[in-house]
Image 1 (tube, rainbow, N blue to C red):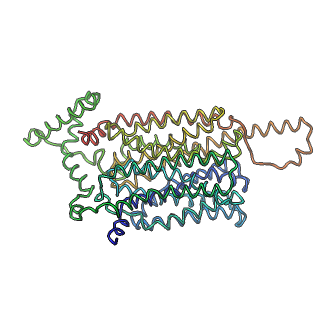
Image 2: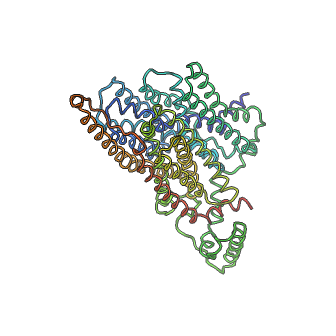
Amino acid sequence: MKEGVQAFVNNRWLVFVAAMWIQSCAGIGYVFGSISPVIKSSLSYNQRQLSKLGVAKDLGDSVGFLAGSLSEILPLWGALLVGALQNLVGYGWVWLIVTGRAPVLPLWAMCILIFVGTNGETYFNTAALVSCVQNFPKSRGPVVGILKGFAGLSGAILTQVYTMINFPDQAALIFMVAVGPAMVVIALMFIIRPVGGHRQVRPSDGLSFTFVYSVCLLLAAYLMGVMLLEDLVDVSHTVVIIFTVILFLLLLVPVVIPIKLSFCDEPRDVVEEALLPKPEQQAAEKSEQDEVIFSEVEDEKPKDVDLLPASERHKRIAQLQAKLCQAAAEGAVRVKRRRGPHRGEDFTMMEALIKADLWLIFFSLLLGSGSGLTVIDNLGQMSQSLGYDNTHIFVSMISIWNFLGRVGGGYLSEIIVRDYAYPRPISLAVAQIVMAVGHVFFAMGWPGAMHIGTLLIGLGYGAHWAIVPAAASELFGLKKFGALYNFLTLANPAGSLVFSGVIASGIYDREAEKQAHQRHISTQISGSILSGMFAVEEPLKCEGSICFFLTSMIMSGFCIIAAVLSLILVYRTKTVYANIYGKSRT
């Protein structure tokens, strides 16, 4: 029993499951669409002012350089504690202001509070991803997809918990966002750490991932059914409590994996585990062997090789490598060594920044995820403009589709690279085309357009955050993965700053002013002069599909440009993926 408990505490699957639980309440930014209307009404903000808070939220969600730096200095539990405190202070203060318990601060100070509160999420993400990628070095796609998926699902989970507690006012959701994640993170922070996962590889790992995927699909289907039922039928509070208890049980189910591995399966021989090399050593040895010939193959291979079928291409490249190795051994050629690493090896941040591939990923992510984040930030106003009173249902729905997009994006892109040795960014291009169609639905405002648009945007946006981190780790290595990941996440606030803070809010306020002017003229024509003189000025409000028509069409165009950038990246990295994954297939 003692050995079983020790194995359970140090099991990499326990770390993974605890990271899933942290991520399930770490996507604080996805609840902004639910809390933004109460902030807007309580503080009498217009749409432009609210968009500035949205940009501050996106900056806090994405600027993770401090989190990355502290995670290298502090133990991961220390970084998680800092994030929990930031989350508590930032959103706790916002709740005090909205409820009148603290004096109202100027807009710039509110932006700082939103930034600080949301920035705690970057500590949760960094600690979870870094620990689990190190513990599962051979399963990056599924691990990143599942973890980022639970972060996307957190909006629906927090909304369901809020519905169960049945607070009397909407501002209480802000209080729950401030307190809930901090409590969960503090409870689990000592579990999140590297535990030598490369020595815990088991033949049953494939079945374990299949089980986790099954739980993910069941969880998403259950939440979708619960949200639709609560929206369509007036269910009692007792039923809501039962729904939430079942949700918690589903979240707890994956813990059976480390329990089974620790207490039911036979432990592996300690001597056998000690003989297993670390993945860094394996990568270094492989790099040393391949470095001699890799650059020569790139220089000497005929241009038409990349156009051949995969099997023939691998055969031709292997023949060329053999000839070059033989010639180098006989002294017939002098092997050149390029300065700096090749694609697929470990890059430093500065080495990666001078590569065109990194900037293709960055700008593709900026245009694709930035347009999706614009929808997430403005979902409350978009649904209200089309006549929907309950905005929570769409926030929950896009959270669920976001979750499935992340889990599915990681799973499908892994099939593409493992089974076909084809570049992972091709799945990114597909996701961006799906998002372009979703934006068109929002623009048209057809019946059911909110539901279909939410589905397509959620799936496409979520897929970005499973595909991009995995692709970056494949092209630029794992050594500085935390820094690279936090750099790429800057694309989110950069896109939101322009798309939501300038384009969407500017167009919305312009249309709202037009409608307000028309209402004013109608009031004068009807002869209600006195009522016009004494009317209380209300915040600008736009109604109809025209409010976001132009914005959505612009976002659709940006997604198409992003897909083109992703296809350029696919063309540039075909050989790299063929070398990385083609050998494992032969």
